[in-house]
Amino acid sequence: MTVTPADRARGIEPGAPVKVAASGGTVTDVVVTDDKGAKVPGTVKDGVWTPASRLGLDSAYSVRSVVTLADGRAQTATSSFRTLKPEATAKYTLLPSDDTVGVGMPAIVQFASSVKTPQQRAEVERSMKVTTEPAVEGSWGWLDDRQLMWRPKDYWKPGTKVTMDARLAGLQTGEGKYVGRNDTKTFTIGRSQVSTVDMKTHHLTVVRDGQQVKNIPVTTGKPGFITRSGTKVIMEKVGAMTMDSATVGIPKGNPEYYKLDTKWNMRITWTGEFLHAAPWSQWAQGRRNVSHGCTNMGLDDARWMFESSMVGDVVQFTGSDRPFKPTEGIGVWQYSWPQWQQQSALR
Image (cartoon, rainbow, N blue to C red; front, side, top):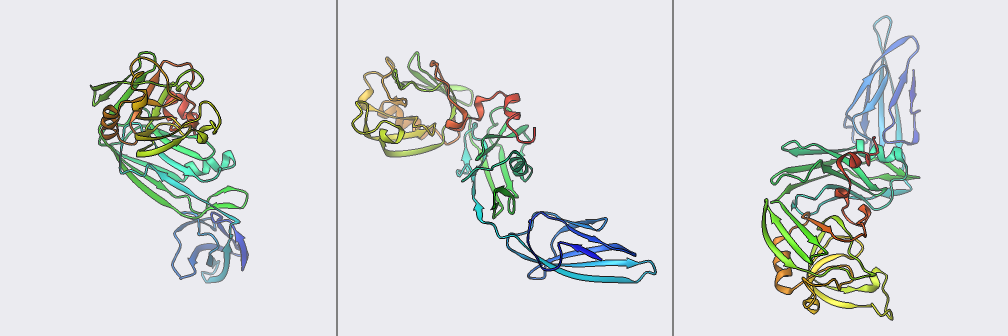
């Protein structure tokens, strides 16, 4: 009887099968137990035991193999092995963090570091599951090698319940780098709110559950700081913050440098675009574009927008020739449905 991994082997891959070969008999059972003696779920076929899910990292396991001889007698062998200890642990977060979100929010797996190869990204997808109530057609896709997102074909229907199940523990994402844990996340889709910013007419219209509820005069990016056109998603809300242009490449000493305390801020890109109150530009709102790329509103309008919005709400921008790149925010809606499906590593 020959067992692979060999007895006392170390550094074994967490997803590796246990293979038992027998001469003069038939392998009838293979049982794997952890260091506490608990049976590890798995299936046995033709002398190969395959784990139901990847084994733990840097963990010890015992194998009991049973071979039935031609005369009916059973012969048993025992062995042990230890899985590998990774050089680095791959960390990830399931998003959104909010329990109730807008109709544009995808289910997100955000890795802290890159998932290096197409094969590894495909294995990440195979290890993820999204369940929706009611059932919704959707697809996984990668924005880059750290961001995996699942979006429905069209915007979510209000009330949809979404559950993400990440069975990623033991998965390799780079040289010597493995995921250390599994996770789950559930969120619910709230009411529908889709806003449109027309940068040529300088107005923001808010449509909730199919009905226009607000029309707000705004100002957007001036020449040299043009606001991006495209379909964006509110990523976070911050009641008060200090905006320092040095964080977006406009340093102190530059004539365009600014450092301002702002209220009612709604982030829509990682590159510094927000919807927010800007009483200093109220003279231009509804008339001209004078901002550094943000969408400026008066204090009362911004407060109304802030209180009426949630993370995941859609904001569509039209009227500029500067496109919003998908990686600059939650850019899943910048793709048509066929294009988005092609972002999957399984295509």
